[in-house]
Amino acid sequence: MHPKEVQPAQRRRGAELEEALLAAAWDVLREHGYAGFTLEAVAARAGTSRPVLARRWAGRHDLLHATITYASRMRPIFAPQTGSLRGDLIALLRELNNSRLDLATAMGVQLGGYFQETGSTLADLREVSLTGQSTVVDDILAEAIERGEIDPAKLTPRLRTLPVDLLRHHVFMTLQPMSEDDIVDIVDSIFLPLVRPVPSLRES
Image (cartoon, rainbow, N blue to C red):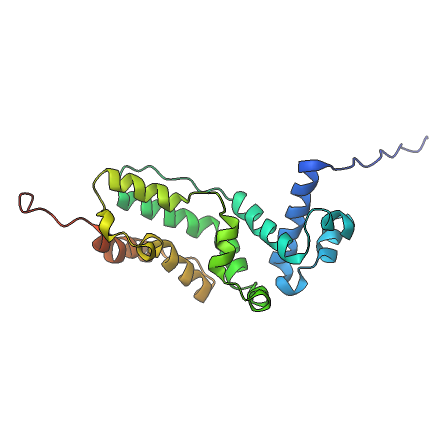
């Protein structure tokens, strides 16, 4: 019996290699947090060498930014298009609640060392991962303004992010998904009353 020929391993290049490196980096971050998130650990997980990573990312911080962007991109969220502001927001919060728990946990809980080391905040890291992108919330709110469901004068920067901020706060504090009742309560009891147009005298 002739021994089986061993096929040479295919060398990964370009986008395929970068995707594999970022997938390995995300695994290391989730399992070991920022303390264990080193170029050496990521290289070992990816089955490559540290210089391969160093040629793409100048250091640990740049690799972390790319990893968070990668993890966000792998969980795309689209505007629900239910036809109403209330329906869109509830559907969006439900989707975020179901699909982004591990990402939110990594960004808010496992990166304490990174925030302390760099003096940056969760908001700063979020901006890095969203550079050049409009958010789904922006799209939902723009469509609601066109339908006359929102008074644009009431829509301050803080209010624009309020529903997602409240969901994120719940996840960070409890490390658990939010209940359906609480999602609906955020939209019906907190957000919508703050942004709805005041009915005109003719409508009231």
